[in-house]
Structures are given as structure tokens and as C-alpha cells.
Image (cartoon, rainbow, N blue to C red; front, side, top):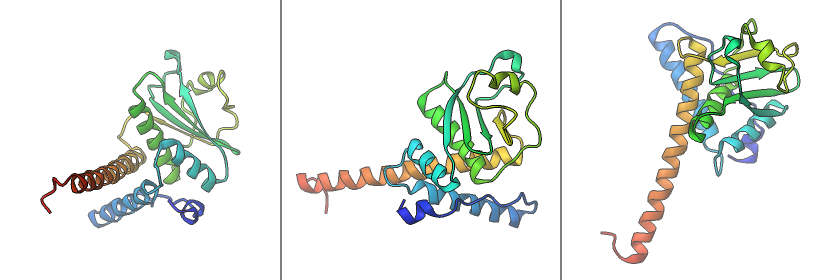
Length: 189
């Protein structure tokens, strides 16, 4: 991603639409968002977090998610936006790939400007030991299922970013293989 692109305002997801044509337009818009962020040079989830932080003009912190069973939450990821920072909580008892996908999902919520009305029950106690004051939290979105439109959008953005990055890396490897084959004289050119 170029410096100019990194400074550009992040794109928000359009509001939920209902008919088929609107759904197609919505999916096209989500794909455009993924395309923009998947083009970061030397892509990594950490690099994307830095870009999002710069675009939002506030720190983006990633924390391990350690919810006690008494919290009543069954989440593997959570985004909490305060007045001064974004906090992404990620299940730490899973693979690195899964953790990165969870982070991308939570970033998907940010890019779509998703909000929730109330803090989930049990969250105040779960946050006491962390770095986020639940009284300062403006919005909290916990990844617990994919049944709502917001969850589906965030998941699609995350999956599309991963797909585009993987495709770009595969093409780069294919180009390297082709060049190596030419050097070794084994290509059919």
C-alpha cells in the first residue's frame, strides 16, 4: 500500500440492504474494502493494524482474551472502541492463523463502522483485570456467531483480505518459480 493510500480515510461498509441487487452492491463494496487493505506491501496483520490505527487517528491494541466462564460470553474475539483507542481481544488458546483471522474479523467491524447498543452482560467483570475501563467503552462487538448481518460482513471482509493476500503471495511464488525455471533452462518457453 502506498503512503497516500495509507493516509486515505478508511472505508465504511454500506448499511444493510434487502433485495438481491442491493446485496450484490453490498458484496461488491465489501470486496473493494478488502482489495484496498490486502494490497499493503509486505502484508501482515500487524502492518494492517498500524495502517488502521493511523487512519483512525488512535492506537489499536491487541490483547489476549481471557473470559472467565462466569462472564456468560462465548466469544473468541472482541472489539472495544473507547474515546481514545481501539482494543481487539483475541482468544489466545488457538493457532496463530486463527488468531490473525479473528483480528481481521474485528478490523472488519471497524471498517464497517459497526456499533452495538449495550455492553454484553458479564463484560464489566471480564474487563476489570485488563486495560480497558468498561465505563469508557463506546462500543463492544464480540464475535460469538455469524448470524447477524454485522457478523457476516465482518467475516466476509476478513476472509476476503486473507484470500487476496494468499492469491498475491501465490502469484509472487509462481513468478519466482517461473524465473528459476528459466534460469535453470527447464521451462518450456
